[in-house]
Length: 143
Ligand code: HEC
Ligand code: HEC
Image (cartoon, rainbow, N blue to C red):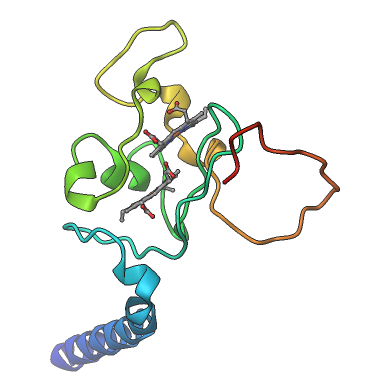
């Protein structure tokens, strides 16, 4: 009985993996995805990096963040963007401002006020604005 259960579990895992691998296959055939830097972990490039619209804008995220966990114990974003990993993942490194706490002290890890990345950085989307917006990028920005 035990062997049968083990077998079924294994089969489900292998099949599930195959379906998952198949779904991500179309992505890698797109030229945009192939244009990305290939490191130990590879984040498919779904869209290009977006221009900033004003000084000190938190850049919008050019990739999907679906399923990425940012909790007390784990920060998926820092696993690629952190100082220890950005060289191998090809992700832009979090900037020095992210290490300064509210009292102005700089530490070697990301400050608590910059820990929850999605508070400020949002994924790119072509969703229509909910309310009308007359915002124009600052001179020289937005392109
Ligand atoms: C698997 C690695 C990986 C993970 C995980 C990841 N990123 Fe990225 N991120 C990248 C790469 C690679 C780029 C650069 C893409 C490019 O150059 O087009 C990028 C680009 C960005 C940028 C654009 C920076 C700029 O200057 O334009 C932001 C912002 C960003 N990511 C935020 C996040 C946030 C927030 C999370 C967590 C929710 C996250 N990333 C998780 C790899 C990752
Ligand atoms: C309180 C808002 C805020 C939070 C939270 C935040 N950021 Fe940022 N981020 C910014 C702003 C503003 C900028 C642009 C100015 C700067 O570099 O400080 C930026 C810039 C960046 C850049 C571009 C750096 C560069 O040199 O071009 C990356 C990458 C980035 N953040 C990743 C992250 C990640 C990963 C997290 C979570 C660990 C995070 N940020 C949390 C506001 C935030």
